[in-house]
Figure (cartoon, rainbow, N blue to C red):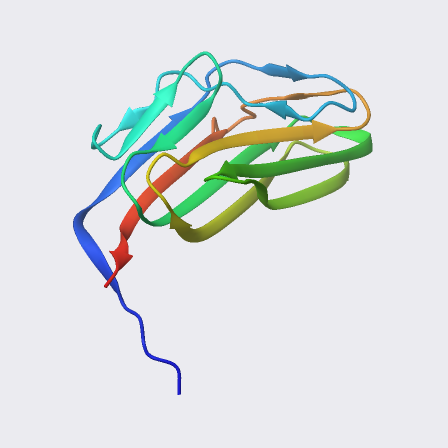
Length: 153
């Protein structure tokens, strides 16, 4: 039998919320990093953010839950893809989801929970293969939420 491993939850949970108020045009066929407005960070010791590059860095090793909500404008042609990228020593594309042929504005959500080491870089990228814009949509929900849940005991 394998030994059990437990996660110790922090109280309160360390949080970072990234949002973008304006439309970001996504060129056709180019994986493009979303550059967010200034982040809302509950604990600056846990996260740091580079406003110029759109890269979030974890400053403390731990279990993180990351959710990336994209809002795409309607476009009946093509496919849209959302990606959570991370690099904690070796570049790894963590998780992606896609949606095709949008008749109306649509939300696409990508989420991952995993352990990141201190100094891991996380970015949020999108791709579309036939003309569209990444947009806030009607409910202003283009956002990424990052929670440090704790670490393995």
